[in-house]
Every structure is written in C-alpha cells, then in structure tokens.
Image (cartoon, rainbow, N blue to C red; front, side):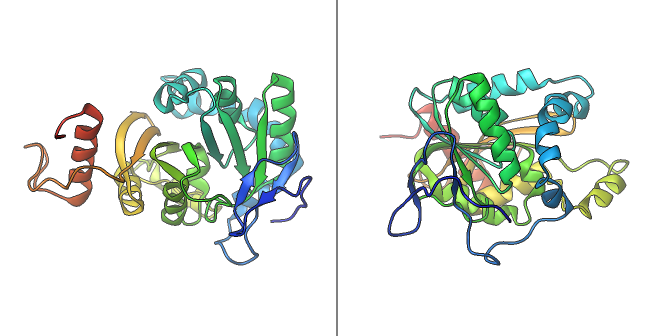
Length: 285
C-alpha cells in the first residue's frame, strides 16, 4: 500500500490512534508491510485516482439498484443504515473500507463522529473532497481492515459496505471489528451474496480479481467466531444487509434449541436466541 500521510496522527504507547488528525488530513494507520494479507486486482485498481473519482457517480449510487434489479435503491440503503445503527449525537463510528465516504458522510450528517478508514489514499482524498462539499467533518485514516489501528472498545458502531466482498481474510477482519467495538456496539454489513447456480461461474471468474461472495450463514459463522451475534438481516436479491451486536455479557447459552424450526441446538443459533432475549429484556432477574 503506497502513499504518505498528510497528518501524523496521535498514537498511544500501544501504537493505536488515540485521536483524529487535523481536519482534512489523512492519518497514516497502516500496519507493517507484510503483516496483513494482500489484496487482488480489485485492491490494485482502487489505488488509481480515476477509480476514486468515478466510483460514486458511475457505480456506487447505482450499484444496489442494479444488483437488486430495481427492487432496492441506494437511498433506501442509506436510510436503513441510519435506522439500524441508530447513532446518537456524538457517537463514535468507524467506517471500514470507506471508499469515497458515502456511509461516512451519511452518518456524520446524522450527528456521529466518524472515522473513515481505507487502504487507498486516492479514495481518502476523494472522501475528503466530498465531505468538504457536503459540509461534514470526517477523520480520515489510511489503514487496513485486517489490523485496525485503534484501541479496544473504541467505537459505538462499525459499518462496512461492499468492502466485505474485497477482504482477503474476512474472519480476521471481523475479529478486528469485534475488538474495537464497545460492549453495546453494533456492526453493520452490506455485501453481495453468493449467487445461485447460474451466477456462480461469473462470481468464480470475479474471484480471480480478489472478490469474494459469502453466503449469509458463512458471514454468521465468521461473526460468531469473533463474538458477534446477529440482530437483524434483510436480503434484497443479490444484496444482503446485516446487523450484529457484540455478545459480551449476554445471558448463558440456552440448553436446548430455542425454536422447533431450528433442528437441534448450535452455539451460533443459541447465541442469537440469547442476544434477542437480551434486547427484549427477557430472561433477566
């Protein structure tokens, strides 16, 4: 990952970023070279200025509509993002793989303090430009999702857009997301899911470029291993929206399967059941 930093950034003794850099600056939070898995062709293309400049107007504002054949729109996606993550004024939010900052700007406009992280410097430059255009403030960090440069229990919410489809090691990245979340924190994901038999040859071809298309139960498994439990999900054609919470302090795992529709208990399903009980205020006392 090439590029230099506009701002030094404040680092604690552990090397984690303690605070934002100067307004408009890009803080260098990159891990040591070779310490994280490399990306494919998609990551390489993301380093181009032209890609960063064209991404939102030519693709991002149209992608959800195209992938859902018009059944869902980017406007509805952003409305769900704010509603599901429910950022309070002043909430600390991290946008992992922010690209040109669409999620970051949306959440900043809702009153959150947003840290926007991406491996690509040109995308962060574009995110800074669009944030200035929209009159919102973002803390910009060049870093890697597999080694987040933040302390434990740092954020009220972490959001990840289609970057999930570009991660070389999603399980490791989800572990990092869980680490930086506060106990009551939430993690939002939007991604393109594994296609049916007709679409899989195309997805396999795209895999040569470093793209991955997980099934929802695969994401559930990675999340469960990281200590994240499902709260809410919605499938719109090829697009999945999913919200997870941090399972710390949840009630004990149920002894039996919570629903006849689930054939036998599994740790993941029982963690989900107990998390839902916790949200509803049941099973306390």
